[in-house]
Image 1 (tube, rainbow, N blue to C red):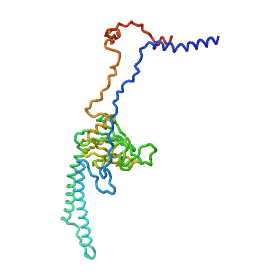
Image 2 (image 1 turned 45 degrees about the vertical axis):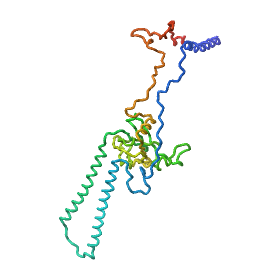
Image 3 (image 1 turned 90 degrees about the horizontal axis):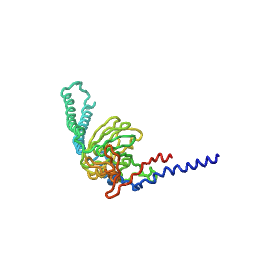
Image 4 (image 1 turned 135 degrees about the vertical axis):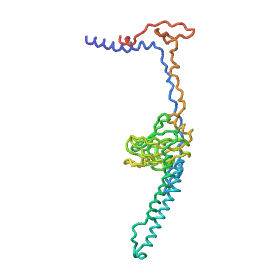
Length: 355
């Protein structure tokens, strides 16, 4: 009896999958063609620009300000070179002359009996008014520079800069919100076989990155700067740009670069053990190349229409004739000139499988 019971159980188990598959055999053949890919293929990226010697990067042995490529930077550089340095030189020369004259005129040999004068109204007026006038002469152009720096014109592009320990992330909210992550490129002897390493085309040592910020030439770009952890500082000397990245706070600066090329900077706020390994690289390209780069990252230009998406219902066998009227039963679609199909009884596949 046990053998007969086992035989019946095995026969029932073998018949169950066959019964479940039987109703599916009468179903129309499925479409084996893969659906069209709705995602447009990524556009090719832009060529990586090699840095120009002494432009946008430190100069070995250099002591001057980097050549400026923004109008604000050129104005600030002119103020520094033609006014501040001139004042510093004149003040230093005056102080040195007074010291030398005092040493010669009032030493013990030349002036054995020193004067006991304690006040001199004329001298006190001079040493009060002259510093005030010097400070006013510095303040007037400084206030003009500050006004231009912190009163930006309407932006053509916004880039959100986020500092992390110890790398940068950049977001493009005006172009679909895509994000890039920039890490410093290591030297050839510091990476494993097959990994990317720094070359001269990437930039100087400790300044080259695997992902550059790309901005359009001649456009006003607003940088919104913040941090995810500690205080960093976003600084690109050739743009006359340096602003802190504070966690929980948004700071803002702007640039307008008319010269295409690549420009380097660094985090300029002590932020931890690897503070010296947070470089910044900005590539300035013509607007057409910028649009191409945005497309290669999966973004879109403002005002551009998204790529046309194929209608997924175009190949559907369901037509308007098959759509039921309100309160009515669905009617099968009938091709013109074809005989009406014979109604088939509805089959409950689940019930069939269970039986």
